[in-house]
Length: 262
Image (cartoon, rainbow, N blue to C red):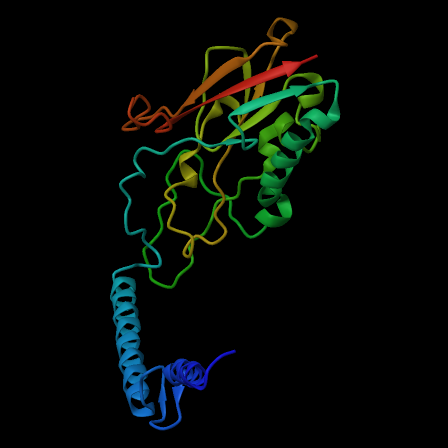
């Protein structure tokens, strides 16, 4: 049976533990008075407001250096890369099974929506073979040259909604360039050229309705090409355009693989 002294010690320990959280005699909470807590909270409030103000000031100064109509950094523009659609560097499907190539057809159709006539109505007919230079007037939207998907002919998805995948002659869209010597190809527009009239590009805000010109490549595969993986490389060719930089495999070129199964 516990003695009176043991009970008193136990009671004192319990009281000491409770006092460490809140001491009713001194009014301290976790060892600090209300005024002490108020000073600490005030310090952190001022400190974090100062940090937030410094961040906002830094962002404001940075935004002052940006132009809504001219890109800040344009070091990559002279040597553009290439992008293909469908959005895959490994294209493999069975031409006899629509489910196997449905994803590629859906990707192409979705990508070409901006090239529909209804979307291109507000764009203008530009002079072919010439750069469409426009005055750099702040606040004035630049005109965009129309590029109708009908220019892509059999790869437009208008006459052939399957883009040739059902017949084993699939279409691939390029945002840049032209030729390849591995297998026979048909280009749309003819010769696989990007007309100068679609350039220069004045930025997203100034050139709101701008769409990138495309080149469609219809791969004319034969039975000998089926059931094996083929490598296709497309390059940008033009004056002052680089496409042979070994440090950057996507600078001015793109390589993808395709496999068609019967």
